[in-house]
Image 1: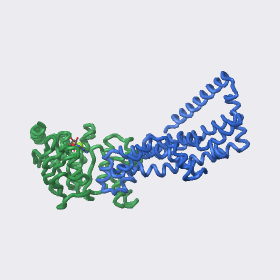
Image 2 (image 1 turned 90 degrees about the horizontal axis):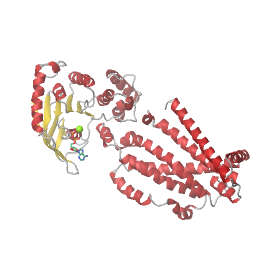
Image 3 (image 1 turned 60 degrees about the horizontal axis):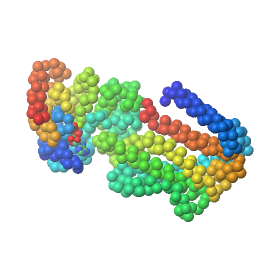
Length: 251
Length: 246
Ligand SMILES: Nc1ncnc2c1ncn2[C@@H]1O[C@H](COP(=O)(O)OP(=O)(O)O)[C@@H](O)[C@H]1O
Ligand SMILES: [Mg+2]
């Protein structure tokens, strides 16, 4: 991507950020309630949280949970989605996807706790299950819709099945896979909040519930900001990988 | 060398693309196949290369029934068949890589071939960054890198502008004269069929079947295009194309 374009994008992020802050500030002034502190008050709470170190350690734990969740989900969803290119495999995968995708997987929580306890593993698995379906559906669609001509082109070079996956199906699907992962960052943060709001004393979700119960609104919003930054950071990291790995899409 | 024996192809949805196609191409011969769009030309090439199975009949190459893609045969695709995620160099060397040539051998073969085709300096570009004429030359490079005995081409020049097209036609003619490959060129341009085909096979509209095989012994010269016999031959081919196109 040309340099000028990158700069323009950063500038638009900045402008949007200011816009949100301005609306927030106005709203805080109009409502004039302790339940919505001004951006400045939250900023101080955020700095205090960082200085004291607790915010950072909660953030780190949340970041790890999301990261493991995403990694677990994609390490299963990507291979299954890719091999769905085969008619025989898709016969099994498609009904499974269409039956299980629409149910709100969050209701599986009791079952997951029963199977994996109430520790980190359950939290990671719940995040992974939800994100798994988003990535699987996208990867499957990409591998199913691949033009047959690419496969013919490989066959004419007497390529093996393995060659076709390596040189065609995987690279052709990578852009879609990374986009799906980028989109699922948002979902995984939402699920993160849900799984951290009980049975744990660590993580941003816990911190939000805790500050809320103490009616410490500046802390509450400071934590929400940390959560937003976590999501934004992951999003940016995946986008950077996308730009690098899928150079051929952006030229 | 290449033989089509009673080839019939019906797709699973019932479309009959080819019916009882019969012809024979001798070793070292250059042959054009011409027919209206949708008459099964691409299907025919996929069958000749062993990528697709005929419903009835068979293809025979060098005395052997075609059941799977052969190392002797290279196919240049209609829309080039290049991979947008691979660079020019990677696209051109893919066939060699799949056949186990090492890095050094690949570099030697591909670099000189790309130079010959006027693609030197474009090795690290992606297909999207090239003109369609250059993309088509990359597709030729990929096929020729394998040093095939038989070169099959599916309307390789149909999306090029007239000048690029002529220069690639000249390239193909020189290639055929130098290497004496067996070439089969599918085209829907009468002039191209006549310029490049020692024999011209005319297919009917779908389901495609051979209407006529026209001999064209006068071809083989870069000046052929300007000669009277060339125009006579074009008229002859046009007449039989018209009978098939109902
Ligand atoms: N996979 C397929 N399934 C069903 N019909 C097909 C398929 N591929 C091609 N056809 C049909 O078969 C006919 C011949 O196609 P094709 O060989 O591509 O023709 P051409 O290359 O001469 O334009 C066309 O009518 C086309 O629509
Ligand atoms: Mg065609």
